[in-house]
Amino acid sequence: MKLQTEIPDHRPYSFMIRRAIEELNQTKGSSNEAVSKFTMENYQHIPFAHEVLLSNHLQKLCDRGEIVITNDVNYAFEQGDSSL
Image (cartoon, rainbow, N blue to C red; front, side, top):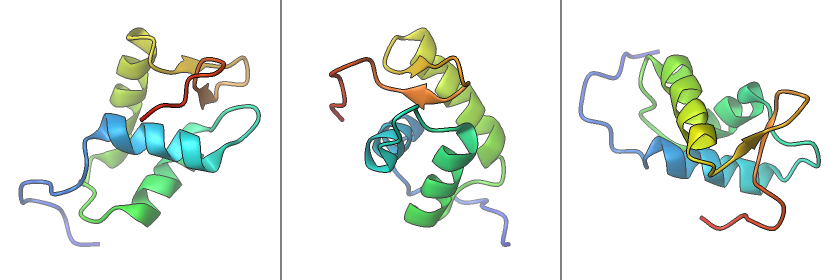
């Protein structure tokens, strides 16, 4: 794997996370691993520190109330909210 040292040309992490949760459409929410796999399969030039960045952005989205963390430690939208 070539290390990403250039300016990223992928979508913002918040967009990629919300898209992953929406498209995975898992009834109990999507795990960190599932969101990561979706992101890596659907976007190019993911940075070397992807796992750390993903975890930080998942937490920020939870803190802002854009997504919720379930009892199963998965990530989901609030009931009825799946807008990108």
